[in-house]
Amino acid sequence: MKTAGTSIEVMLDKYCGENDIVTPIYPKISNHTPRNYRGYFNILKGFNSYSNKKNIKRIKHLVKREKFYNHMSALEIKHAIGNEKWETYYKFCVEREPMDKTKSHYSMLKNRGLVHNLDDYFKKGIFANNENIYTIDGRIIVDKIINYNNLDKELREVLLHLGIKNFQTLTVNAKKGNEETKKINFTNNQKEIIRNVFKNHPFTIK
Image (cartoon, rainbow, N blue to C red):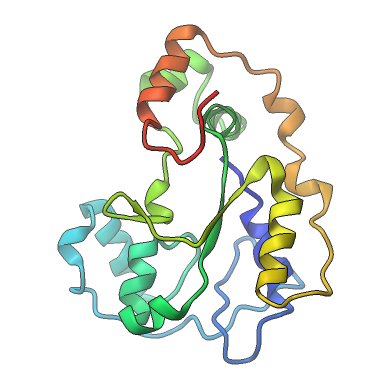
């Protein structure tokens, strides 16, 4: 589930200017300064493109005057900034191989007391399939999908492409949950379920 997104946001913060948009992170991080994320937006724009649950979430952000917020989907961002500006941006994200991603998601839910074991997790059927973050109508719309297992190298390539040369690699904390998830083993039936859930995933499933 975790793809070092927060660590990357904090790292990029210091390269952003006063007019750039930086959304809040919760809980707050001392060296991260949110800015320019407030404002109203047209809630009706694309209203029928979202689920009822998503529209309720968008209404809550509208009430709080949060035009931009954490974990926005590609479609939400495109609606917020407009097609013309959207086309000028270099867009990238970090994704994880589905088996590893499911292990991480299960571990996170278990640690939060939301599931008891793997059987409970698969019975509830709530998987970390968030491909809508970087797709629109099933089409990948980012310029680069960084492979989490090759995070430092591929992130370095992206930053150099963006003209950012003086940067530090992410700390080991970004991957601190890996050792715990390595101990999780799926049955063949569980693996087949994961393959079906992530059948359109951009990375080859183990």
